[in-house]
Every structure is written in structure tokens, then in C-alpha cells.
Image (cartoon, rainbow, N blue to C red; front, side, top):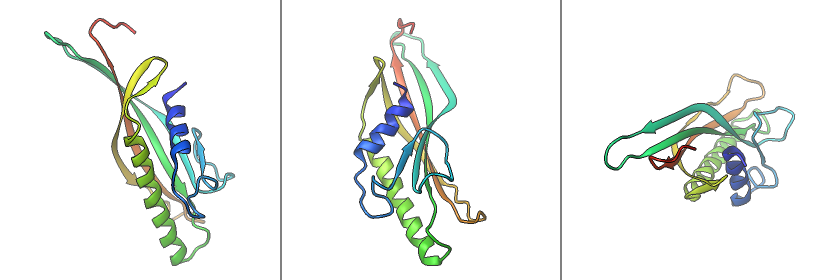
Length: 154
């Protein structure tokens, strides 16, 4: 299983928010990119191409590979009013806190016999307020570290 799929399933299975806008029944979890044809809100998990390999030499060498993933939260307000925007931004804030809570609570991930440790690298809002209808988006950067010993060649 791919780590992106693992992260997506962990988010879906551990999602504990309630309320009509961000309940697990109304939220779409996917590894695809955002789609206008799917109900909002959407949470997408995608692997990024940035892979970093670090090798240290010495008496106690440490090797690791870092993989980057993006978790995007997409939310379209139900209508074009200030009240709707405020509630949408509040739902985005709650969803962002929930994603960070779940990922921080995962601990060591073991997929395909390779233990990896996920870390939240940061987040930023990318709201598309010029689109009609408006689309709110938050991106959360996640990096996993796969540690290897000096003699592991896999």
C-alpha cells in the first residue's frame, strides 16, 4: 500500500468532526485532485515529487529518505454571502486542526515493512476568492522519514 493511500484512509477512519458541513458522511476523502463534480468539502492526499536522501558517515551512520505529501482541504461555501464565507472559513479551520491532530497521532507508519514517521511541515491557505463560486483551500505539508541503517541496501 502506498503511504498516500494510508494517510487518506487514516484521515477517513479517524475523522471525528461532526456538523453538517464537515461530518465524515459529507466529506470526500481521495488521492485524486480536486473535482468540481464531487460534493464539497473534499480532502485530497497526494504524493509530491520531492524525495530527499540523507546519508551520514562516521562511527554511527544514519541514513534516511524523506518523502513529501500534500494534504489539501477544499471547501466551497453554499452561497455568496458574508455569513456563508464565515462559516466556511470556520469549517476549514476545524478541518485543518483535525487533519493535524490525526497525522500527529499516527506515530510510526509501517507500510510494506518499511517504518516511516510522519511530520507536519506546515500549512498555508490558498483561498480562491476570485473564482465564482468561491473555493476555499488549505494545504498541509507532510513529510515522512524512512530511517535505514548503514548496511541496508533497500
